[in-house]
Image 1 (tube, rainbow, N blue to C red):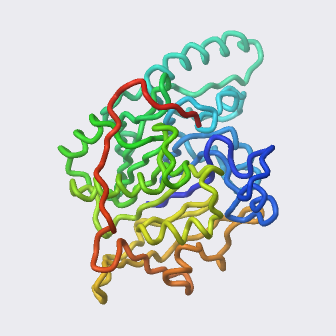
Image 2 (spheres, one colour):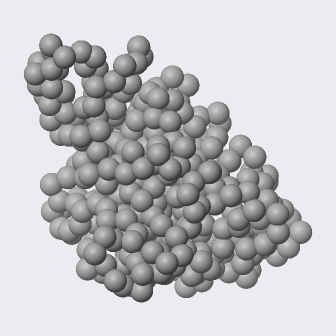
Image 3 (cartoon, rainbow, N blue to C red):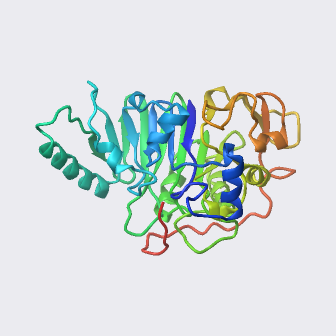
Length: 353
């Protein structure tokens, strides 16, 4: 199973168009992994979100949208669902499918029907098939199993987290999201999932509490501790941070060093992680360690290549394609465990993107 990140920024991306903060200025000057476009990723043949930067991902990152017939939409914000791109006429004999929260699906079914009626005399006029994913629904999509869980995000915007299973591997996609909802926590406690990778929303500056719609790195650590306590992750699990905004005020290298101390890898645009090639934990040291043979950047303007090391790995291993990643502090576990405060299902919290 391979995860590829095409967009790892928040709703505004980095650099923000009119922003002169330290991080945005640095990204303009240095490019590379500090350029973050809006959310889009693939898990093998399943796509998660298709943002307003989808065209840029095709033009500069080598993404071929024609390969992906099944797209999971987390919610209707434009940095995750590019409405205008979904209505472009195209010449392709195959059908493609969008899976999304029920309220959004209802709107999109009506919108697609209206578009078809208006353009009936101007073929080709193919629109995607819309599928409503109910919270806690399990759906078989070919040889993939997808489970939708409710997310605590922006009030009035129904948002889903996704669990994707394929080839004996399981990925948990946790963005956009603040701290997990109580009903989602209850579902996970009763389940028997083992997550091989977890991708988390890390939009906010460390210690920020102005919104409950996203997380900072400490809340990501809280979430990881919770998942570990209930047995959903262990030392073999790859923990990733994405949906990173300029409010975090860390360059990619700075954030990677900070994240590595807490057991996280910071994703960047075009990063591919091959979960199937992960090896079991190495037992040669006091701390749980494992080897990731393939972390690479796809071809892209100013982005990763075979010789570029992600700074988190460079800080820990720093040689070749093999990178030893240590989970937790010396002696195992995370330092200073925090009490998890789940987000109740309420109309509190703000946020977009």
